[in-house]
Length: 233
Image (cartoon, rainbow, N blue to C red; front, side, top):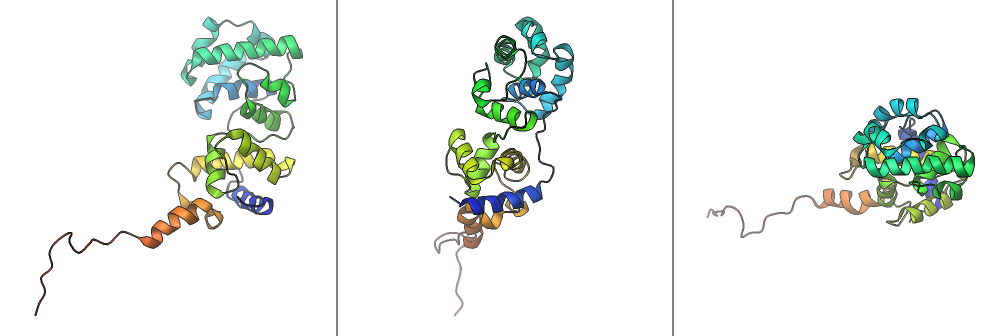
């Protein structure tokens, strides 16, 4: 795994490649971002952004959403998928905010993950983007990209989060996550576009897999395969 200095160098290059990196979820308050992030599970940010304007108009805060019923909420979020589970999580989250936090979103990890439907990734999204508290969300893109490059070594989000946080100052955590997510969406996809990557020369995956495949090239046919050659005397 790369050293903290090497990790910061990699993030410098990726941030230069993706200067527009930020969450793509649209929100105006911490409550809206919390609800939108819950909806984004197994969905896309674009799909969630189509749903939330009408949703937030009807339920602008935790107190309004806490009074909703699943029958009222499910049709509004149906297109994001898993709408029954998400409806239950959203109403439960809102009710817990009202009961335990006066309707406000708490700016603490332990309080956030105690809310229904909220894990560390969701909590870190809200902390870092809406509440000004350093947070490093780890989703499937961050997992894939950080392990490929070699700035983390684990298949669990918690371990990757800890490794990246140890290598970076807190003020960089949220931007680093946004950058890795965007790089995973645009460049380092499951089938990566390595020729477009700003850090391919520092990437463990590129060095061990892609570049070696190109060096070896296509395998030559054995003498016994293909068309027979006739020799001239």
